[in-house]
Length: 433
Image (cartoon, rainbow, N blue to C red):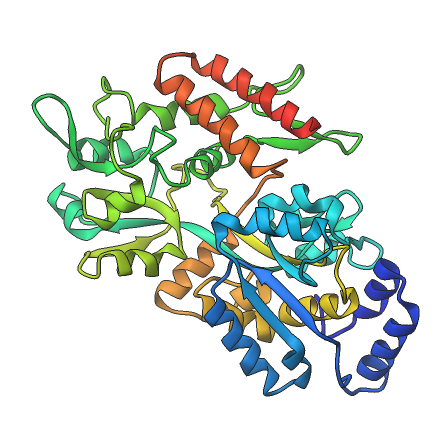
């Protein structure tokens, strides 16, 4: 477990070689038993809520004056990666930036990694949730985990009751009956009200995440490292491997957009799934826990609740999907030592818990998730513990790959096996690039 500043000594020395600066920090903080007067100015960039993050920094600065030199800048999520990439290229970026787990490979060459000699994989695994392991690179840890946003099932109480169900589904196979009963179609088979938004890509929010969740729950891997440590695509079975379950996951997902199926409940002419749920025309919405407050703002009168993510029946191993956010120090940082210090301060049990409560998003730290909680917080924390992730070579590229795979099947342009083979080849190309 990461305690106080015990890792600063080796991390600062080996990662940055700043022997003199690190020695002074270590002496005053660890050996001397007192806090250093300052760590210098540290600017953090991220997409997390400005008001909530700044409020935590202000609260922390009342107890530790070093936080007074730390500032946070929120950048719109739609512009974040472009703005960050351009800033890092021109050495005008932040000292520390918050990185979503699926961008770890994209930014790996631009950030300092913490060598395994100083932060071992065993230490990392015992401190942070399993879903954070995509921050582990080939040469060290790429980011210090901070928060996790797990997927959950939002359900409309009124629509669920009207369909004859007292509670939302727990298992994927229950969606067949639920979709049939909760979906209302016109005499021309046009969908007027939907039970669940699955099957398509463009108007299903988080379509890639939902499909990869199905694959991961079924025991598939989307990418993996070979014996040489190189990342490879694993959407289809290789020679000598057992048949990958990705085809059954793709079939299950796309069948909900097939008009000849009794559980047909979605097509590409409908509005985006989050919007449909917010307006009350969608009974079940698979989304992220952080969307709960947004949905309430969209429709304050919507009678909905949050339930655990669907699982495979009789499967002992429970798996969920989620977005894990970590803090990375760019090689172009003006104050890398101060930035790393701040990263580990914020990832500590106390500050991590404060940030979690302020953002309404679980901590990525096991110690914090193990603390007692009630209501929605308890549910979301339990879902966070189940989060598993996969190494994504580049979210923009793989978004397009999954779109083409799904739409190839729903349009009838490709069979399931053909769509998977094409996606596997495209994924391999994305990795090579």
